[in-house]
Image (cartoon, rainbow, N blue to C red):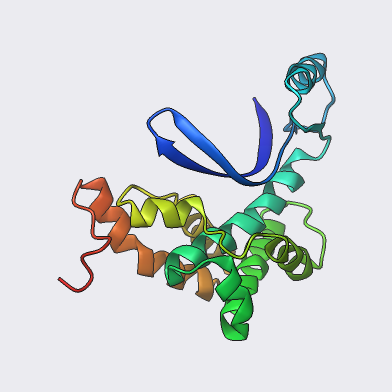
Length: 198
């Protein structure tokens, strides 16, 4: 098995149709043990032949966690607030909370043995600043669409690792708890989105 991270914003337009809505569309992948193998070279060459930006990494776990730092905040905060990144960036208290997510993810990642460089808040802020002000996230899109969300793999995973390593994760816990009723309702086929006042 190989690990990978894709840097793209996309939205499901209709069944089988995915629109690229932003981001570089870059793919980074590699062997989980850090080896550069013939099969990894073959996969890189296949991606490159399509014209897609691709990078073969000897440190794919760190790259995957670097993306995780970003998408947990972007997904969690756009879904929680129901606002695009432009408004989040323009509201200091809300942007601080967004960056607190990155700190929590980095803390549990380091405890889990992943080599995550210091300065994650600055890196995540640069990523957020590079986005179109109207950018949301797939977590937000699933929430408002009444679909199951990646709640367990984004803030939920951070909360569980925090509990395992005895690291406080108050922001991820709040995001997880606030969105959990929507996710459970979507799993039952009874979406709550849009019914908050009914």
